[in-house]
Amino acid sequence: MENSIGLNIRKLRELRNYTQTYMAEQLDISQRAYSSIESNTSNLSFGRLSLIADILNINMDDIVNFNAAKFLNGEYGSSKTEKEILTKYAKLNEELIKTQQELIETQRKLIDALGKKK
Image (cartoon, rainbow, N blue to C red; front, top):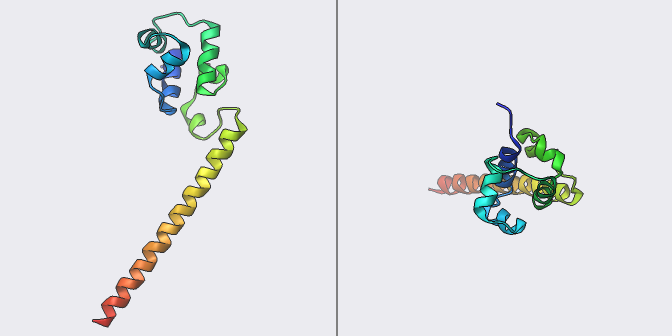
C-alpha cells in the first residue's frame, strides 16, 4: 500500500507526540480542518505543506517520501542540534543502564554477604 502525504504527516506528528489540536493551532486552522489534511480529504497546498514541515522540524521532501525506519534511525531532519541531543540522550541512557547494572551487582553481593553471616 502506497503511503499518502496525509498519512505520512500523521505518522510524523505522532512520532513527535503532537496532537491534532496542537498542529491545528500552529497552522491557525480548526482541528477538523487539520484532520482533513491527515485523511487526505482536503487539498494540501505547497504553502501549507511547508508550514507543516516547519512545525515538524523536517524537510517537505522527507514528508512526501517518509520512511519510518529511516526516521527512527535518525536519518531524517537536518537539525544538527537535534541529532546532537539524540546522541547525548543515547549516551546518557547507556550510562544509566550501566549504573543500574552496577547497583544490581552491588545489591547481589550485599545479599550474599548477609546470607553467609546467618
